[in-house]
Amino acid sequence: MTPARLDLPVIPGATNRKPLFLLQPRLERKAITDVQKTPSLKLTVPEHGLAAEWPCWVEGVSGFTALNRQPPQQAPWMVGVIDADTVEINALNGAGQNASGGWLVYQPGVDLTDASAKLTLTGHGYSLELTIANEGLQVLGVGRLMIVLTPAQSAAIPQAGVTYTLDITWQNGDVDRWLDGPVSVRRGGGHGCCT
Image (cartoon, rainbow, N blue to C red; front, side, top):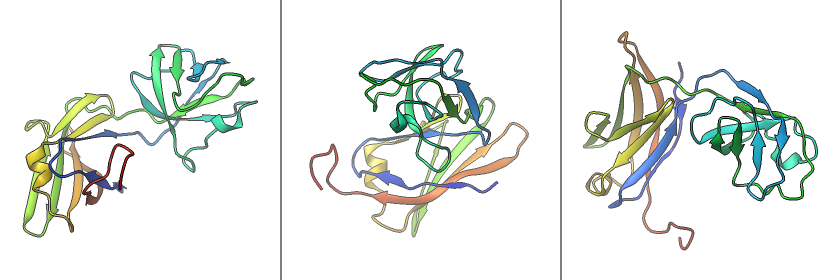
């Protein structure tokens, strides 16, 4: 398996929480039976199977082309779960739209039951290991991990030359390198106010 490559931005001296979605390679498609005309767009998708907010695409909706996004060429929407048959795309306004049909498309999450995870940051003369045991990684549910860096840990990361890897060890002892990439230490800015 080739690991996915993803930058890990870090703000030094702050508590950094970075959610990760660990996705299976296959796509699930669930029929959309109603595109509701609500300001925060709601879709009726009977038995959609999502437990929590999840990255999803939408295909084949008529009358609202801005809603359609094709996997994997386009970025997914972050879709919230209202109930077992309803999801919400807060980023879109459905008021006044006359849309119908289509499919909610997503990759199911990886079941981390009985697995362990280790995120290792390394650079010249620097190393940090985050695990579930040391609370640097938190399992939030199927396919959902949270990276947690304390203010002291984030302040100690060198400005440049640091990379990370995320390894998953399965119950049978197999180890998969799931993610890797550069760590980007950012100074200043944030909250949409300044650079």
